[in-house]
Length: 64
Image 1 (cartoon, rainbow, N blue to C red):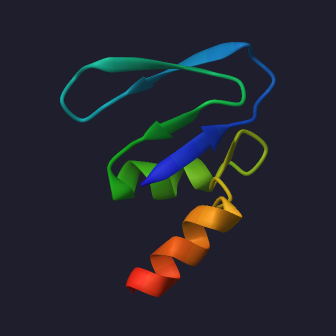
Image 2: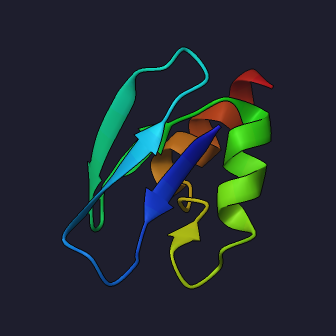
């Protein structure tokens, strides 16, 4: 699942299930496991689901 950091800090660290920490800057999108992504999205002031790019969404719909 892709999530985008929109919080107040310039950058945050996400602890992945593998133990690796990933730095995510404000405005960046990061790929995380679905369960972690769902948990992050509950923090609506800090995380959001990225909006699909219109051209990519149209292309996906044609393939779909």
